[in-house]
Length: 178
Image (cartoon, rainbow, N blue to C red):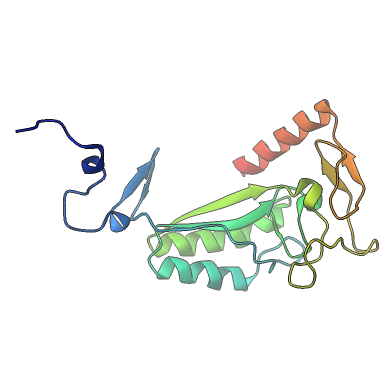
């Protein structure tokens, strides 16, 4: 009799239940199952503020039984949006609507999560269903910042110095703590 455990046996749950439907602990967070709703760029926010649309969209995934429901890329500053329809978390008024979605997702038994983001050189674009990789008209555009001056969509990119990059990183940490 072989007393060694095969590596594939370590992944098998004790019951006959498929592994997908078993709980998963990641650090101190316990997911009720391994179904994860990845962040989807929906471009449905208004000036960075989420709407009832987000509550319905993400809430439906939680009701459907997902273990983790992740909010789409959420910009840490206004100029960090890809499009005008991107979610944001740079102003205090943006917190309460996110709390509402978070509370609803939790009430359905799912774990809420958020993807904090900054568009960098890819920002200030029209929504992709209008035109893929097209810059906003100058009257609607915002300044683009990135670690280097290399741009996309023939936009001017303002490169951040090392000091400004560190300051920006601290800004991301402060948003995360909110």
